[in-house]
Length: 233
Image 1: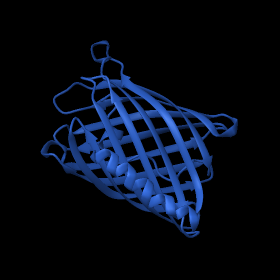
Image 2: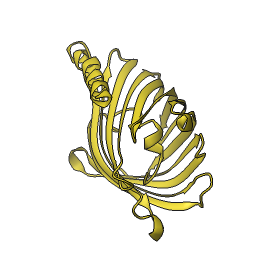
Image 3: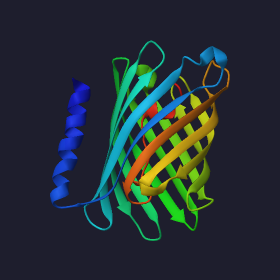
Image 4: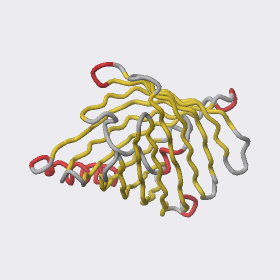
């Protein structure tokens, strides 16, 4: 019930903006990720998500994200909803703040923080820092960033780092690649390593397809929240 309420609130909050604001970008995608270890291949995750961004003024925009996840461990399901407020400065810079809510395994957690992005020449940088407030084992801080280099008009190569400082003390580092097709479709891939407390380092891989509308990247900022950081589960 609470998940339905948050999704309804996101839609209700953003939908009226279409009367006074311009939709600058949107995206919808499907992603699969899992661990490479043969003993952990049942620990996988499938994500269906979408995002939309509205420009209130040339400098200020509001972005909403919703994602539903299905996990291979014990048939878990998870839902995430996030709202971003973004100030678009000159020279390809954007500064923002975000707030969202996670549901997974019957447990709720709120998260909020600040984020920023900078594009120059063929490079795009993005970073964020946040705080998670919820069940005792989910309290903590998050930190992450990514860099993408446009090797060609269609191929983007880069890297991504994410950290959760809670009971799990997760760190993940991956190499990313994106190939864009005509008409706004793209394939995304990542290969990396995840290091959790009381666990060996494990390799993971993810592959996704998405459709973008409007701006070159669909929306300004990527997903936030605890579930977005964990590969596989």
